[in-house]
Image (cartoon, rainbow, N blue to C red; front, side, top):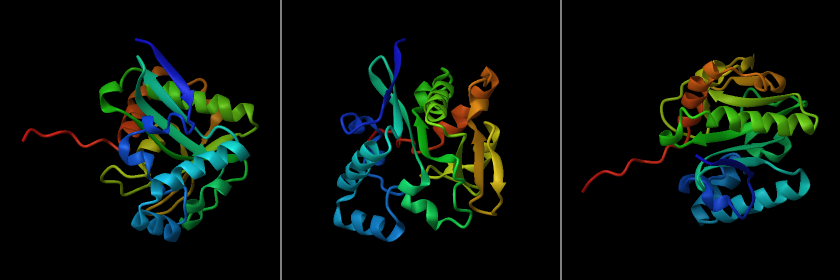
Length: 205
């Protein structure tokens, strides 16, 4: 099994799951995002966001391939580039942290260590760029796939709550801790990354 992790660019944006390619939940503020969806311009807005962040800040995501098949991704950026983050009651993200926006591993490829490698690759990238932690807004009442990560799954892979909230706590993971993760973290990562943006199963007619 050949696997590789590649920085997310406009060239491989099409390798994200279909519903994620044009999702602008994090990339635009709520009002602008809803307007883009209504106007049918969300895919263009997504491309514009990625292009701007790449030019201004640098790499903001990773795509993981197994035998050249895209099977997962992670998206992250400083909160200054994530307009939606200011809409949460537990904002702002700490100044020494980058926001984990969303992540995903295809269910058929979980249990192979890909989740751990994906997050560790992000950790190495951000440590090299001088950041100490990654933070995320969790969903404490998560029931179905959405852009927000389940809070209990984030806690299971080592995130700590830094600001409590009944619905949207803000959680933090010290990046250095991810570099020494043991394999027993893998099952929790599978649950976390597999819970986000699952593609609907095809049903027979």
